[in-house]
Length: 317
Ligand code: RIB
Image (cartoon, rainbow, N blue to C red; front, side):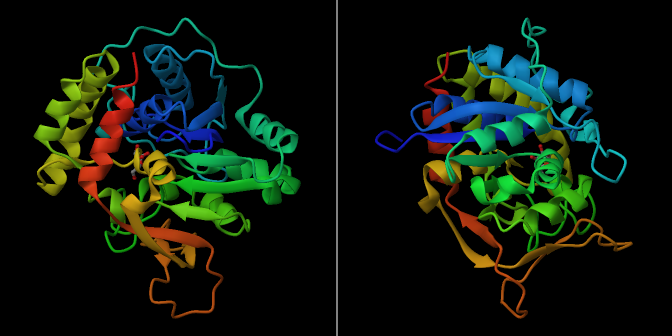
């Protein structure tokens, strides 16, 4: 990780244990990422919990210098769909993190995105999206001038070959706010998707969780406890040797893109289907002449991925 130019990023997140892993990975890679702020999204659980969870994680990692902003309390059009059945009632069940002493910043998450992009040089800031895309989409609608200034979007979003997780056809982050995903996909901003097609290759096996738990600080064991809680649902559902670890694929791609492989293709989102609402239709074989708007990651090296995650975790308090 050393020697890379430090990347200014904005994190969009609705933690969720797997996203806690992503946030801690980013904080551990402090030589590679300059976090301008975190925008809490309504998603896995209600906004009040996701704001609180962001504050808790920053206190756990002793990085309360990073501001947290509250995003929209619901998707752009639809009612909020949450995932307590996976993440528990607080979204970070599995470990007892003390109630935060810090508060979110007073500015709204959408205004923060707009103001930060406007004040930055063109291309300077990358959006790291771990959550539904509601707040980025709202920022793009309210301030279309920011689109050409955003350096890129790297998002855990979508599914095609692995099909859906919240419905038979849709991945959760896109399903929660398909209208937001559509706005982002048509923004003209360079986009990379880390979909279920690759995150399902990144399995937190017992050996990998044991190694995480053995990290000699408090972030590593705490994360192992969180993931041990959230893995129950996926182990029961999929019967795999470990639960897929979605969120850290975003920072991992930015840190070591050669861990992954993919293709520049069109990705469009279904917004009207009775059975396919929120489905990301990936034109992998380039059958249509739709614009190739997404670098769609399909494969990754799990051993290198977990080694990178652990290297980052070991740098934390
Ligand atoms: O579909 C997987 C993603 O949706 C994960 O990031 C999980 O936290 C949920 O947000």
